[in-house]
Amino acid sequence: MIFNMNGGGGAALNFKIAGNPQPSNPVENTIWIDTDAKITNWLFSSHQPENPAEGIVWISTGTSSTGSFNALKKNGILVCPISAKQYVSGAWVDKQAKSYQNGAWVEWWDVTAWIYHNSREYTGTWSAKAWARKSDDGSTSKYTPSLSFGGMGMNFSYNKYVEAVGTVCNNALLDLSDKTKITVVIASASPNASELNMIVTDALKDGYNSLASKEKVTAAGTYTIDVSSISSGYFVFHMYNIGEYAISSIRIE
Amino acid sequence: MKTIYIDSDYKCHITNDGTMTAVETNFFDGKCDVFVEGYRFVPFGESWTRNDGEVFDGEMISPWKDFAELDNAQREYERQLIAEYEAALAESVPLSELEAAYQEGVNSAYD
Image (cartoon, rainbow over all chains, first blue to last red; front, side, top):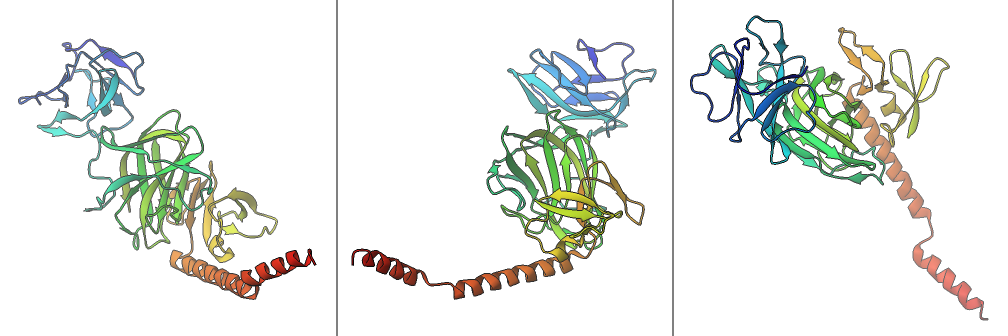
């Protein structure tokens, strides 16, 4: 959905958009963009706008969000914001954003769910490595993906147009002894994403083994891996060639 | 890359009994038969329903046997391979003898 208006708001709108400082007395559905750059315009869209003007804020939308709201006072248009970016000095910049709902500022995604099981959070530390997995051909090139946090969650990207691999990994050793599946929610994937593999490994090192894996992911969605026969392991993302991904949650159950 | 065979429950096999589907994958490169046959391979576009009702979409590869058991089998397989290599190495002609024979051959050419 593309929903574009020239700043400010209208009587029929059920939300407002504001930059820094964070509004101190916000109304319901105020969207705060954590930016000091002047917001010249804004739009909601599931796809990155082309030919953006300086200062425009793009709020990406999806099919679900913890900050969903009705855009109009008389309902009718449900908006599910996922992330915010602003076009600043010729480039899109990730911006933290929250919505004011029911008396509190709320995130648009589950901030606790990097690696999460019931009430225990395996936060670990995420890092990007120029690692291949053991089954990669020995002649495959290795590069380090870019890695950042914000917007839709954990974001990583890889842009190599030759056969090349890279890895994003978490250093928490997961206790899988009474767990049966790992669920990964990918909030977004770039249209040119070539291949993402989600792997449970027994060791964090270049040339890691694959104990279990979900292979060849190229789109946003929810993906599961059966781990009912594995007692422990590490979780890594193995990337091939090209793609940008935003991970909103990883759960073990 | 290795060709394995999957049955109707997506369990992997080394040989085809005539009812299975062939799959090419590098996931099992270097793995022994016991290891391979303890796995399930769900191809892309297909789904497997676990006996508790959970559905897993392919391509997904995961063990159906206890991984510790498969890992032990693989380690034993690799130990056996190493033992075989060492035995072959022990029976081979030492490099020094090869060099000596070569030199003797070279020298005899000028006899």
